[in-house]
Image 1 (tube, rainbow, N blue to C red):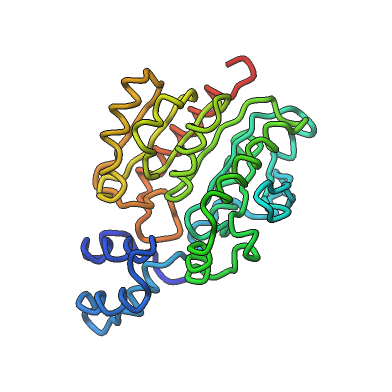
Image 2: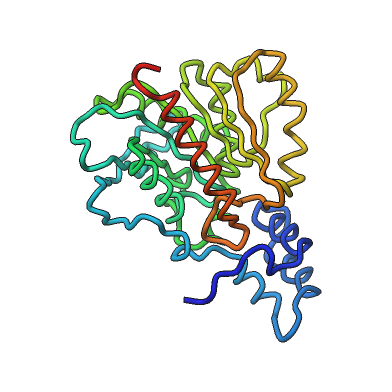
Length: 300
């Protein structure tokens, strides 16, 4: 396995350029053309892109066949006319049929890739029932290639995708092996979905957006669930939307906590890429698990 690189190994302006590429503001050709100026000492723009792209082996913390877990693929009826949305459901094997708090896990803008499956397994080891739906189900599901996944993602109907995640949330809450409490955690695009679900689901019990775009401020009064918001330190695109929304949350007396992790990049929790920050990710995850345990317990 090649040595693990960190954000400190790259020019900050290159990381900003990569963020634009990841979020569709720049195509592959445009990235390679602009990244060429950062290619030094025999490196190429294509090599830089490869170094910045996910390495799922780096980010695997829990094996898919870990005996401590019960995992299964499920089909959830889709109200958006697609027939179904596929999801990855994980529970601790030791729980049997015990009723567990449930957490909906929402992926980044690449669909349900191996990293998000690993996130679901981590939550199950912490005592939750975790469901990670794949928004790309109507287009064949996550294609196994990040570039193809991003291209497919741009073809989704945003309104229909939101209907599917609302349906997935309802399906998860209604399971007999759940305790009736539901939380949502999302990352990047999924962070935006976590924010959006908090405005759409008055009975949601907890929402944790990681560096997700904030909703329009006028929607803040619809939020009934407590929020735990994680922001990167260097993330102008996302952070610019937060102050107005925070002011609206305060005005609506919404319970929320917000943490901004100094010096981190967008995607700092994703341990498959060099933008990963181990210290910040560990702290954010500990806060997330504690937050869910506090708000999703049967007696909370």
